[in-house]
Image (cartoon, rainbow, N blue to C red; front, side):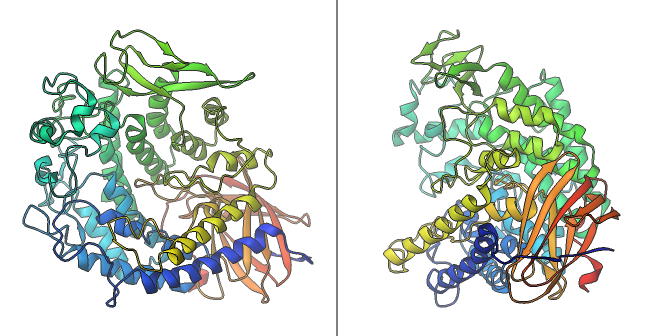
Length: 632
């Protein structure tokens, strides 16, 4: 293994390095308070109550601690892993005893009984993060294999039809896809306003509904649930492409080809459907493989083009393409999500944002002419600068904080994808050279564009500012806990998620050169990963901070600083899973080494720093959770 040693002394450590190391410590301290006060005397979550019967909320409980293993894997304290493991086991036990209207519990065999992959994706982030944190835990590996097996064609669940290469229902899980009955949502978690009122009605041909507000009327519940069961309870939808993460996770643990092949078979099936549908991914496919065979046309399905639109449609193709590239190395898979974004951009319109710039507004939804809240004429119309409807496309908006374009660039490293991100910039929103500590959207945290500005050289103090924002989020959560006396008055399913004090997004960007994974079920995709040789564990050694200062198609710039009091030995790995390979690596003293491998050994004494310029060939190695042999 190639070895580098830090020899440059640091009399005053950089602000970002001190703040980064302090964030690891503060996060652990906050988690200790969180664990002490927000679980009962047996260590169980305070929700759901004993008499609860329902369908929703299991993912929200797991989201209360899903990122603790990830922060541990980046260099956090051992207690983060211990607490996360303990609370996950407690959550499984509770959810396995929480009843649903179907006569079986929420969790069956430790997996959600029947939910959509928006929620299953969120709940399984913990599962994927444990692969990075503790791949040697036999229970972690066994669960990864067992969860993936739920989606094999020969599984008793009936989730997957291997011959037709389709998931047989929009909601699926350990009990299969046939427990999707929207009438059960009445009085068991949601009323008639469940998601449809907020996102507008997906259909125009239901005579009982004259306007979108009718969805909010409980008197219409019975008819609404009838229509939902008719058009949204069976067949395949793009969101099911998130199952590829479950399969990729199992592959990273085992290297078994059956998981890898499943990913490629399923993504290819969806690409064929997209081509057959004129280049636009359909949002519903019946169990016999017919496009539009559930909703009556290619749009109008569950979480589809007429429902939540691009925000939900973009999840599955992006996640699946990332997984395929990770497993195969062929960037051509990125054409799948890219083609969908390009269609939206081609149908977009420039709207003046200020005296200098126009902002591209892309359509986020597709539906029948005259969709609720929009002009029924079917022609382009502007109302106070807002485009309403054109040729079936509607809800023209900025790309908002959806991360799909950023993930395309990150995976491809192509200038064309980087320019695509720039062309979607919302000039009417915050300056890319500013970090907003209030921005806490789950899927991107509102800071990805500021990070890109830093990588472009336009936001020099971003590392300090993102650490400030991360500290602010931890302290805001602690302030909330103090204000309520460390006891929520009426815990609901969100109570843990809304108080989780751990903030991982800035740490991912700085230490691993990684964007926030697609929150609804994506895996971590990173430039580098670090390991502590002295402790034989993943993550930066105690006292060591890392900063990926540049990411280019040719490689990265990385700086390591030891702000602690002890000399440290560490390994830098190319990629989160060893999928990349270092070429020529130069240090700040001019030493140049041809590495031609995925690992670098670094000796970094106390009070020193080391800067490396590393050429990198991406996605050329078989990815694995296996840790470097030097840790053993």
